[in-house]
Image 1 (cartoon, rainbow, N blue to C red):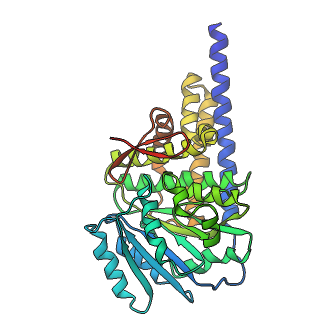
Image 2: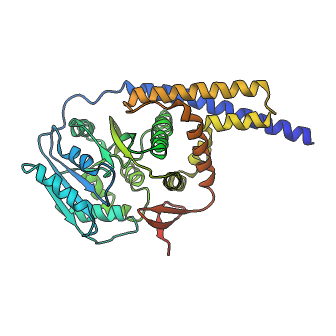
Image 3: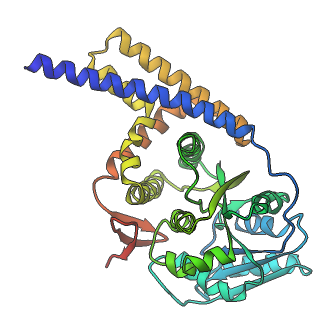
Length: 382
């Protein structure tokens, strides 16, 4: 019986490692296919409103906010929103507004809360000043170039498109924890999203960019419909598609400036992200262990007693994984030096976070602790 059980464990480990290698091959193909995408032809030149919720001094905040104002676009409005009148980010926002005296820029400071997701409350407080029929929401740690608005609005030429979103690449603004955080975005998040989209259409958005028709937003119940959900970006896309609209993925890639001061903060950040995804996509997230090829190959190596074939599987997993590291960098224009020697560490850390995400529902967000409900809603933890 013990021999049979040992063989079964070996077969399962081998199957999981083999499936993860097949995933890496699919991810390579999906990333290269995305790199061949082009923006929609023509130009969507209707006026748009950009909503920028701000909270605290993100790294490079001035440059991030300024980039959304310096756009090659005919007419646009930018509304900055801050909840706390003592937030040091206000001085940065005011500096940006002074730099563009001929642009339609404004600041809303309002502490009103409509739900546990304070970012959504911030958006709801800004909504009263919106002038245009296309709204674009982008997190404050994102940075873009002057062609951003043209690229993001182009899919709205199709009247069936209710929302548009963008992928984002990580750019480290610090030491090793920031590099590992960027690698999580670039080497794991980006390929996994594109691989998943090979099988089903887009039904969600990303906080890097959530562009939505005002009519579609009103149809889903406005920002109030997102007020208590931690994954407001995911819920926006899902609710828009439930109303019969399409969500389009723009080929434009936003830059996410990543600053993780230490490993503890990095793990806490990634644990929040992992538990968020698990709450809204429980089945898909459970099977996402197959995206961790290197840890699964290491498990096979241990289970097999360091057999020769297991070494071969590990070598193959490492080779394809490092290849993916370079292909992602080339496709998405990732800045800085490549770090293939960090690939095993990054993958093992990701696997540990994946496993740890099943033990508990607590998340830390903006210095607050929340309890994450099964449906993705936030409950404030005392």
